Image (cartoon, rainbow, N blue to C red; front, side):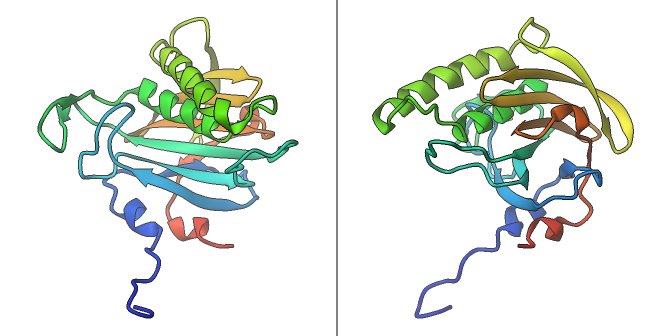
Amino acid sequence: MVGGQAGPADPLVPYLSADFPWYGLDDGWSGRRYLMQAGAGGPRGGAVGSVDYGTLGHGEEPARQYEPRDMRKFAVVVTVARRASRRSADNTGTLEATSASSAAWLAGSGLLASTWPGQLDRALRQDWLDQQSTLAWDLADDLAGPGWSTLSLPVNGLPQPFRYRESEYGWVLAGEAPGVLLGAYGRGVSAYGTGFSTVPDLTAYTRP
């Protein structure tokens, strides 16, 4: 406690409380690694009182606000727990079981949140974001559709099929990994050269 106020919360706590393994880029990535966010509840679902998904960043941190010439290069890995259909925290409804579509939605919405078309001002951005988020949800719900292609990437050294798509804002992919569902999004970093692995020590993501 400093001056009667609690110090900053340890950002590792929600990650360490998860009951599933975390995935990041494998040892082929030599750049910066950092924590982003771990949360409860799936896409369009309420909190369930436990960590259900989270993101680990690689490269430069995505912009938090509009930059006229945003050239940041990054790749973000989204780990989603495998969950069966279950009651919401307030017991008023049922949350859908997680699937590769859940990972695709979280990855797609994450890419959108870090993108701001230069021709839009602040007043119009929320309308654009709502519109694009609905489109991202529709795409995620149809991973077998023509909006996606297949890409094979290593997970813990073994090839694994992913569904992949590119847009003017960056790329998104989604698939499965041992124990979890896996998504990723990025810009300026080639998806074709990425590989994933479990993270044995999350402190690698807390170093400056």
